[in-house]
Amino acid sequence: METNCQLYNLSVNLKSIFLKKYSILASLLVVLFTIPATHAQVPTPQQGRVVRHENFPSAQVTPRHVDVWLPAAYDPQKKYAVLYMHDGQMLFDSTLTWNKQEWGVDETLSQLMREKKIKDCIVVGIWNGGRSRHAEYFPQKPFESLSKTQLFTMLIGVMGSLYFLEFPLFQIDI
Image (cartoon, rainbow, N blue to C red; front, top):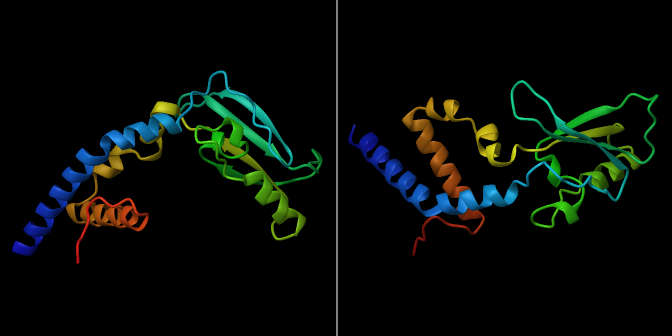
């Protein structure tokens, strides 16, 4: 019983440290990562082309842009596999992203299709909701339903990932 209590106290303390130390940084990253969907240029990919569906409506989330990437040899009479991707504004054109980096989706898929390693496909890039991105991708209700053990395990996993990425929450001197 004492071990469970100690683990819980440790997880509460670590969570408190994490939230205090990185909530401002996390908020800043969310703001930087989310560019409002209004007045956005259509990406110019290096391979293929993008068709924009502006402010696409949904009953579940706020309207947002949906960018559809079509390969260079796209034939409207042919059937294509479809790859759906989140954070659509980050996929195709580094000149339009907040960090001047893109995911290289058009280049990678074009090469894989040319080499016949994958089926011919198109990409549906769904933009995130800007300031609502965190709530949409990380819903609160499932998080709140986790047991204390699950929360502790998740917290340790997050901390381990951050430490592995040389972004430690704490330093251990050996």
